[in-house]
Image 1 (tube, rainbow, N blue to C red):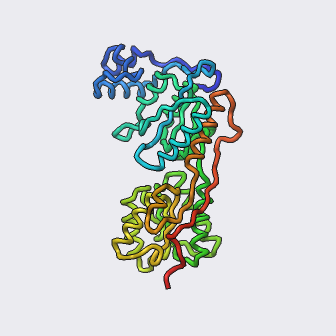
Image 2: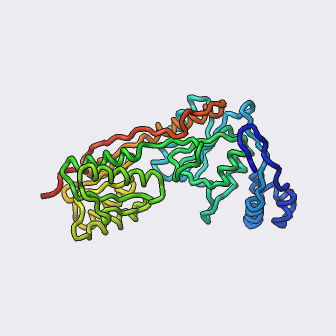
Image 3: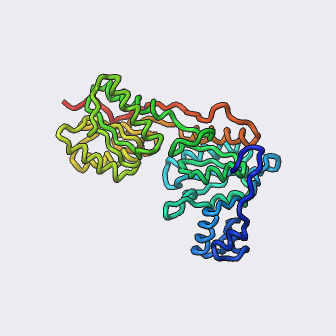
Length: 347
């Protein structure tokens, strides 16, 4: 049994036991544990599986009194403007705090989609003082590892509901869904669809719940066929939009739960010879640069990505100093940015 705080970690299997289980030498197992690169992929896989299977735990190394001026930012991807906004916020806040940032992309899971402990070993090897996770889907064992090593960490827009006591920062997604839908209702729309992200992701389910709440408050019947999930993927949003357009009574407006998916909605409408907003009003979510570049410019709900990231960094600094935040969940407000993609319904 492992206890966090000042309690010690119970002794587990030695590295020699792990090496024997994996069929390798102790020095080879040590290389894997310490994040060394000079290990064959198959050997690394066997050792990693043995580490997880036996529950091997490296001794806690984080010491606030000896903490470095280095923090890690683990992001889902570096290929989107979404991640760019998060990185900008972290860098600015880290500069103010006199910290340096190491950025890693997609390290919490390996190429096969299984949990990967390589980033954990590298984290302890370089002595980072804390970690920010952006859109990370951590496993129970990874949460346990962070607590066992007493490494402060904060989640930025967590994919799933974090365990009790885990500090996270996000946006007011439910209110954003309400705001987007109320905007369309105020224009006179009643046939309003939603193209959502992943069903199990916290932010997506909250935005859809806000959409449903706004319809219910307005006395509008909710149509199950108007709710489509596209997994925050532009191509999937394109397909879901075509499905909506093929309904016997298609919607006159759609709330799209990300600006990136809204690009797929625009493409589907152009493919059918339809125009935004003359034939279909569109509201996005995020307010990424793409929202201003589209034609017509996209009305969207702005979530303050850079501010969320900066807030997470400041919370992490407090935790590194031994101060526990009063609340584990911080939500920053969203607001509607009106542009040219919405209008009263046709006819």
